[in-house]
Image (cartoon, rainbow, N blue to C red):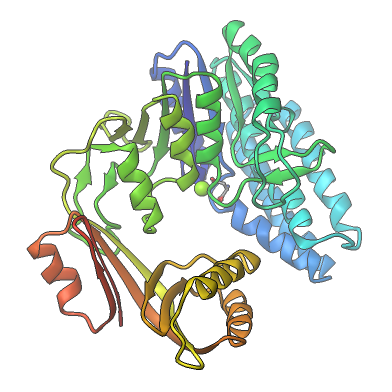
Length: 420
Ligand code: ASP
Ligand code: MG
């Protein structure tokens, strides 16, 4: 049993969908669950629909949704012959569900509507891909993952009910596989016990795929991406970034923690718990070996460089020159929770505390005004946070030394600098 996950870029056009079918035709797997994202940038486009609807701009919402409909219909027409009409019926059902809602007035919270609208992206893409694969003789069954993934109603960041989901996995997925059919299903979405759609957080379909792998005791999970390997840095930032062929689970968790956008951070735990290897492979050239993430210690790693722009430094100084003690720290962490804000860096001083944040303007403003009760608050925006794991002299010189540094932290393994 294997799980494959195809991201948005791998199904962004008719050609790309047919490329996915080529990969599947040649993969030689017996039992396979195929988890697919929304096509291309559909999730972003659907976010705009939800925003317009919630802002009371019904016509804009409907018009934006119309564009998304047409894109999907066009791709389906291009790909399908004998199955086109059946596919169109299904797509139209999904369209109608969203449009019904868009004709209403919002009476609930934004996050609820967001999930009802945005979740359709995955339903549309998997519907088209499933019909197309069947038309090409790649026998599969389309499964609505909302019948399997039960979540709470924490819309936009829903939490999985593991027990219920495991039971549904055994009831709904295993029999399909036993029947010698592959499963085609959605990442990123689930449903509450009241059948409301939920989403698991942006880029959440890696996480969905990892849950499938965990619950079905898969031999491996392959995430198909448009890059050849996991690299030691983002090549858009650092042109001489190098590929890494093998990484430990721990290393990937650390990388994600410092902000590397390799894999959705929640993905690793379900795999590590069952020691299931994760293969990152390139859908543009399936022959390439890619990167394996597994239980083995990564040896001879190059320095791993993570650069986060658009950071805001916040300095908190006690008003009365009292030391920053446990009560202060406790209070600050409570505010983090209340405002769902996570610092990217923290540094304690005697009477001050320095924090860095991604630039979430509203949250930072709310946090600052809470903190102003106890502290003088000073903000410095427009900074960059550079982290180097496994640093050496050369990487230090190249990425840290020449910067105007405001905060610097160093341990045996990591060096971090907040700089201009
Ligand atoms: N389609 C969703 C997103 O773009 C989920 C995913 O692709 O992982 O965030
Ligand atoms: Mg994606």
